[in-house]
Image 1 (cartoon, rainbow, N blue to C red):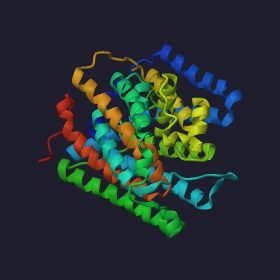
Image 2: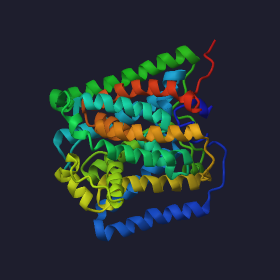
Image 3: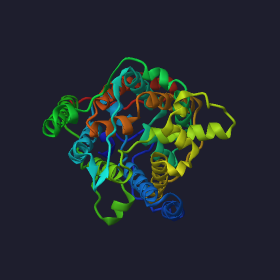
Image 4: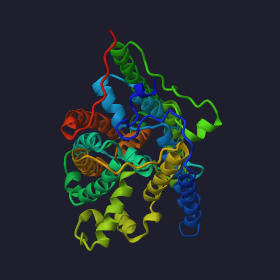
Length: 412
């Protein structure tokens, strides 16, 4: 009943339940990319960048083996009442909350200063997340989903990815204007309520969301899809996958915390895309020196340096390589190059919308939602509400582009 859990980018990667032989060529190539890449990064960029690249690889492998996505899970919940994907995300957030909150309250980890993913609660997040929600339904994946499915050979998201990059770069032209829209500023519940009360409040909200999904799923289907469904029977399946959603949730929480420890900030995706877009635009001869966004010190420094010197960018490269490794281990790296015109158009439009929206919203489902909520930032919760509304609109638009919406018969 694995397909019934519904939260697994079902329109991008089919079910991975039948055992296939690993593709040794793909595994070797991906392994060389990961290990060779880390070895090459160390002399020029230091051990932290090399470590973050490998953490990215572990994230890519986890995302693929657990088919852990946001686009399909949210769509399936709204359209079919199946909430396993949302419950897995709440588990991930609960574990991350327990790990992040004490460290962020202290401000240091292993003697090094660390900071959470805090951003203003305002119109830019509201609009950006709504646009992102529409985009991820048309594009067929969220930000992390786009990375890992493209890395694993999914050709439709290979179209979504460059469009995402273009949208994120385009948004930098208008980002200062959006910053001037009404905002309450950064609101940290850790700072507002203290560590203990903030922990209780956040865990209670996460538990309430889980409760809602359980009630709605039982009411519609009469039973629940388990988060531990499909647990590996042996070491071979552990490496080849698939993994249950619970495993993916736990691994992603731990890997985000590892990112915080090594990089000093939580996991993010969109800024790497934004930087890639700027680098490509500069290489193409586009003059954007007059754009305010790229005159700010951090952006100016990132643009002047290598894409391998930026923590977010190097992790994105790692995710692509890790997903390629996972697809090779699963024996499922088999790109299909024939894409009908309407889904192709949806992939491009969805990517543009996700890129533009994510930049306005201070991040995507990872940087704004996952890392934002794990950091106790209220903008992460606003992002969830707005992106869920966008998901409802995007789900309604999918049939226009020849894309399916998962629905099953309700229990009698």
